[in-house]
Length: 72
Image: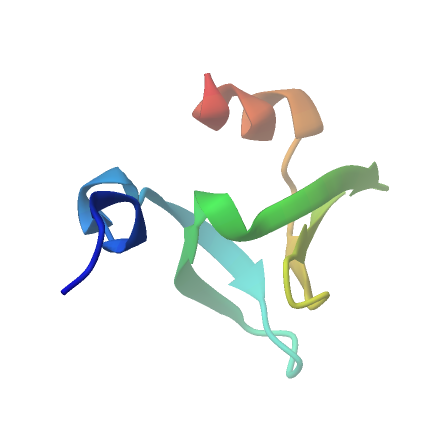
């Protein structure tokens, strides 16, 4: 038996679709849990996203302000 605070509520999980560049330089569609994003920053024309496991995802040709509008 779990206390209500211990139960996992998947109803609050939100995913965002990202077109990222994989290690081979090819574009691929990934869905990322918004709760796992630690930080993001602009590098040249791309947005770099750091996840809670410290992996980095590169979103090509994206403006940081346009990207951040997804969280409003």
